[in-house]
Amino acid sequence: MVKRIILTVCGLLLCLSAASCSDTAESSSSEAVSSEPEVSSAAESSAPESTPYSPKNEVGAKLRKVYDIYSSGRYTLQCKLTGSRIKGEVDILRVVDGEDSYQLQHERLGDHGTVTVSGKSYDFDYVCGMYREIQKTPELNVVEQIVKQGVPRTSPHTKQSESGEYDTEQYTYTGDTYITVLDFYFDKYDSHLVKYDTTYSVEGQDDIVETREIIRLDKDVDTSVFNAYFADTLVNFDQTTEEQRLGFCQGLCGSWGVTSDEMYEFGISVSDLGTVDYDTLFALIHTYGKPHQRPEDDSSGESSGAADSSADIAEDSSSADTSSDTDNDDLPSEAE
Image (cartoon, helix red, strand yellow):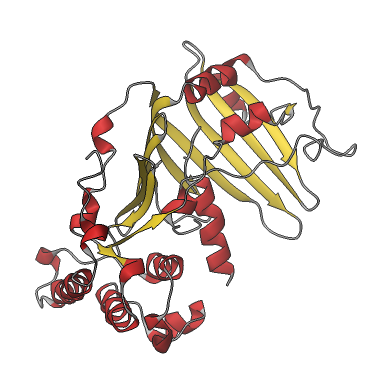
């Protein structure tokens, strides 16, 4: 259960959005991964008197420039996410153009994401070979939350080496039992955002630390990403019958090496697979799945055989979709 909570929380942080950069201790659903930590209301954000910080009700000039890019409603963000509870690195691409948005996350097992195009929103997961249509509401990324909700600017306590290399701005918000500190690092010459660190402190628990390295943040947009072509090859998960879903999930668990003991640890049994929901299956596979061996490293061919078995099940399951689910001619071609 703890792992499932972590997955959900980190998924919400993955979108850096300063970005949806998204975002999973080990992995998260795209709907969740595309987002940022929730900022408490301005009233809640006031630091207690005992805090070592000196909050100011202002937004720094450098973060304001980043906010201007996001608030334009047209931008591309590319970032790399690492953290104390994230396995390896997560590469995130986010493209926004008005109401259309796209986000793709590359994690240790493969790619997943979310897209909103022509008023319709979808989660898609190439690891599990599935997608679903979702009801999506507009979300504020972390920078927008800081600006619009008046999160206090505080005094950064950075390492000497970093404080000399970058210009920094720090913002802190608190709740009854938690505090979140965001340290933004800007290039000293042109003031572009280089990275930001997020430290989540929860009473009675070790701090969770995440770093989002900004590779690209600008107003150029490739509109070709706004499409639902994945519906031609992935299974519409919500349209599967219980029997189809059982076979589909069993095939996935076999392909990614998820054992019955791991399912038990996660809180489900093999018999539950016929009624499991999208988010639960996503979290199960991304938490316990083992990366496939490359063909040249697997002389027995067992790994590729498992993958083929899962693909066959997915193909059988997708045949049950109605034409209205797979026919996307009405679509022009967040993760956001």
